[in-house]
Image (cartoon, rainbow, N blue to C red; front, top):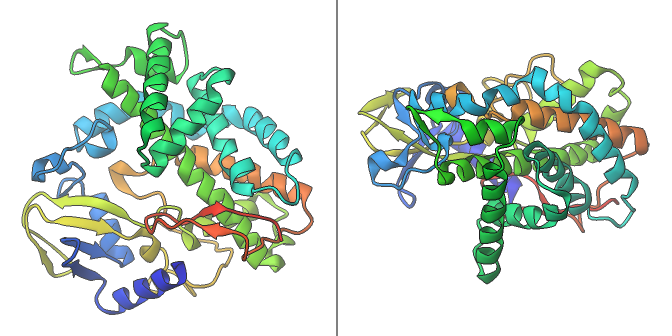
Length: 360
């Protein structure tokens, strides 16, 4: 499926890169310059669907400035690189434990790539150990957007549990910040607080899980590169190239033109929806030399984490977890070989990653 998608991206770029999809009733952007332009200009392109007939959303990712900035700044200090680096030892300990328990027939997704970020976020939020399985199950429902009879019970349980954690008035940490936050001279209500937690689950889990599995896929497909991963700089370059080549988020489906405007000479009407294809932008031959080859690049200005005001707030944490995971796998395995026949890619075209992954 993904090979076909990448071929579609290339054809779209060769045909101007800005295409109207009649079935989805939206403009689709495929070139790097067009994608970056929309992401950088939130004064022209809104992230809030409520202005154009949608429901909006509780999370600040569905807000525009200045409201977006005010809500984002509540938790932003906890995702600065300097703050994230304080978590390095804890993340390393979790990774070491998980990787030592991996067997040849283990599902790497379930037993490592999902488990690592779930435990990290659980620790960050102060989720008790005896609730982590339910937290993980709740996370799976939220990330997969699955709704069945079991979801209601788990959702109610976790909301009750989180409400209890908030009401306990934690003295420090991100839960304390969310619990006591003040916006427009009022405290956040419970729905807004839960919205932050859901955002951390989705942003903190799925992207990192996919980045980890994509790194292992890249190691398996590019065995010659392993010998070059002997410096911190090369590790950094490898992670960044994985983000470019296998962008964990392939496209952002919702931006809305605030007024009539133009993108590279193409007229966009007020209120029209725009989808930004990060996976295509990151393979734009006008920006990247040999974009369909996996190369350790000196300069890698990919936009896998977005750009502008809505750039992924959890990017430093995802990079740190990826760095620790990559070093751990290189230390414990002389070669990384993935069984492409047994491993199963995700079916969601919005993301690139694996449902299941096995050693070969």
